[in-house]
Length: 125
Image 1 (cartoon, rainbow, N blue to C red):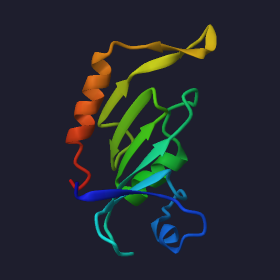
Image 2 (image 1 turned 30 degrees about the vertical axis):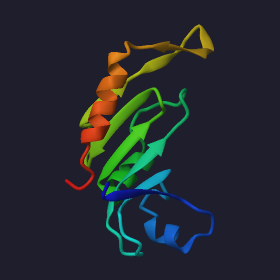
Image 3 (image 1 turned 90 degrees about the horizontal axis):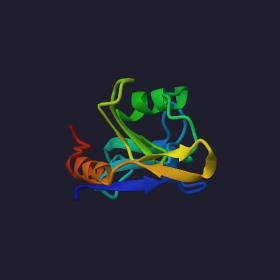
Image 4 (image 1 turned 120 degrees about the horizontal axis):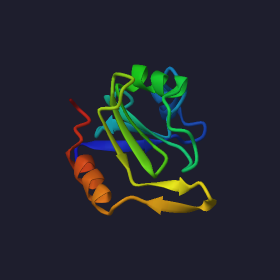
């Protein structure tokens, strides 16, 4: 693996250098280098399972700042590359409209497709 994922630490000087146009995403994917000037390859923004997954000003700002964004609520996974339309999208399930504490799962093949896509996702290109 030639990249690392950095999660914001409270009052960290390093995290201030990584803040983007829309604030600090949940995770920043960096060049695997112990330096403040490590290249930023992209970011990951995670929401709650019942949150709306439409593109927001926050995601637009992350795209402007980081170029690549994985946007997920755990059930829906969207992959962006410097544009507002996702390159790829996976749905693993949805909240049951009749029971907000329950998930209606999609076929297990969707999990395998997501895992395969994640393995092939190139942060550098």
